[in-house]
Image 1 (tube, one colour):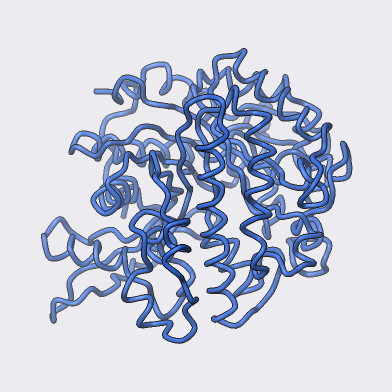
Image 2 (tube, rainbow, N blue to C red; image 1 turned 90 degrees about the vertical axis):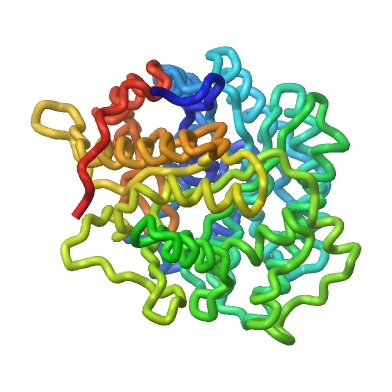
Length: 459
């Protein structure tokens, strides 16, 4: 049995990770340009100055996407390419680039799914305190309007923010992502409130100004848990932990970000935990943040294991030594694509779209000139089996976007990790489809019916 009719098979990328041309076409520096030039912040001093050079290779890269038979491509718009000053006048050269990219995709039968913010705030706005500035929601609304006015005659699927848990948590709390700050908890929570207001204002702008009927979602990530067994007590323990705001790692959760967006209020456990550090949120603020959404986009790579301990309370289950890990040292947990969509749909009552899923693998050009990546094929096979299991059990999953179409700049890891279906030779710019590219093409062609038989359990 394959996926439902109309299921969107796609691949994904993000502007700073693939475009390059960082100082071309009127683009101004982003926070990631400045961060990556700061000694010691990015692996071996790598930057996104060139990345995959996709800015100059639209036809080639769209050909690779269309060659898969993909029906969707999730891309992001670079704010500093569209509005070099962060606000005010838009940059014609920047918008023209996205015109060409979107037209090329549509000409090949690929629907663009556009992310408005995938972490590349204009550096000039960060110099004005970035998300800490109470004007930041208005900045983002103004940028959204410029993009929507130009592209919404062809774009019908929009994401506001990608993974606020990361650009706020790692960027402003831990300092390991751009802009590399270590703010107080109170400051991070204020910046988070402003980012959520930006989401709300952006959604309002799309609804008011889009030239074609549009569907809007976001693309969060969070502390997803899988039950250690199918026992009802373990399932309930995993569900409870998935939707808890944890004391340790408090920026990495679903509910502090998604409950305001989709339920109109901050979660009670988070308010208790944060106390006086929680932002002052007026009723008007919450009405702005709480905008109607059409789908729940979510990035899922792995999950932790949880069971109900002897006292009935959730506890983390430790995996044994040698358990399978990706090159990012993330455990291979295929049922994350079962429990994640199931738990999230139960809570937020929206159709689910998997907006990122994949793995960092150890890929190189083999002696025969090809890139053999059987680990990636096995990983994706296992995860897609679990996604189909979720659909068979009644979860409304509308699409799946593999991360990523090609190897690219992996943020603080630079070019050390490879997530792509297409191998990227960063010295020459050559793109070489891996074995997994050809495998995914056959999966798409069969609408998932060509997936191998149910894989054996991992151990």
